[in-house]
Amino acid sequence: MQLRYYMSILLLMLAGIIFAQADKTAIDFYNKGVEYYNSKNYELAIASYTACLEKDPTYVKAWYNRGNCAMNLQQYDKALNDFDKTIHLDPEFVKAFLFKGYTELLKGDYAASISTLTLAITKDPSLSKAYVNRGTAYMKTGTYDLAIHDFTSAITKGEHSYATFLNRAICKSKTNDLAGALADFNAAADVKPDQSVTSAEKAKIYLKLHKWNEAIAEITNAVRKNPSDADLYQNRGYAKLMLEDVSGALTDFSICLQIDPNHLSALKNKAFASYKMGKYEEAASDYTNLLKADGKNAELYVHRGTCYLEIKSYEKALTDFTEAITCKKDFAEAYFNRANTYTKLLDPKKACQDIKECIKLGYDPARAHVNNLCN
Image (cartoon, rainbow, N blue to C red):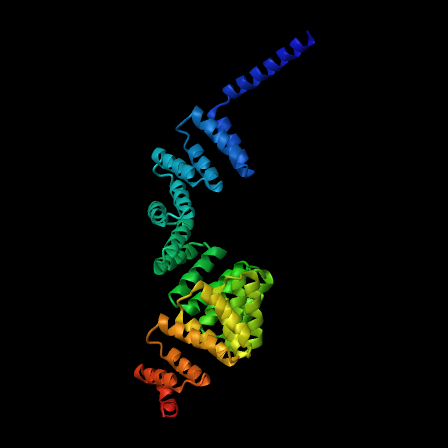
């Protein structure tokens, strides 16, 4: 009897909830959706906006807000569908164009993004975010001049954000406006002084300008903020190498390879630095690893062969110089080094043949050796 009583109470409560839900208007569901959206509970916000639209399929802001929720959840196709519905119901809803274009940008559909954002700008030329997003889409497609124009328009309209200055700086560096790029990187750093990206990008400009000390200073600053970025150590090592700080360069290349063992630029530079320091076996090992990734690279065979020459592994050197010639028939430097190897192996006839081939290929250093090798 008691169980039957409690079941009756429960059924009455459920009926009350259902009735309360049925009694809610579209605006009630909409307001609840706004509440969830503001607390970043996008799933519940979507459920509320969906309930709103079931009550009133013409509720424009519900379509728009639900699209924003889906965008934040990276459900880009659903977001685009909702923004399209918003635009269909209200073709003058400019922000729907703005966020549709932004969603297309996030999705990687840059051509569509540019088209949509152009419509947004046409409807409201003061919409600074539309210029930022379209500029980013242009940048992604390598259309750097148009990207710079859009970022400049956004800045003129008061959009002084970190990303806007940073992206314009990157575009300027791509068009070799290095002074302009540095100025924008500094402006980005003023907005967010703690960003390692700014220092890293400034360093790239200094590397292009061959300002090695300035590059090292910026990279060192970036390393403090982001010590796990392999590229930073590679770039700092390169700058040190240019300043003849071979030991310091070797340390940075080694750290880079500890973070990313497949970093080919660091591996190549480490091999060169090791050779310069007389660490020929280590350099040869590095060139072996490089050849695993690029087994037809004639230059790598020559470099490794030279290391073998230094440690008197003449047969290995001979094999590498021959392999280099197989990969590149007119590689004069390979013939020259093989001629030298043949002299070490006491085979003057083959040494003479190779040195004459060098001269045919226009390798002038060979001329000084032809008489000694061929008499």
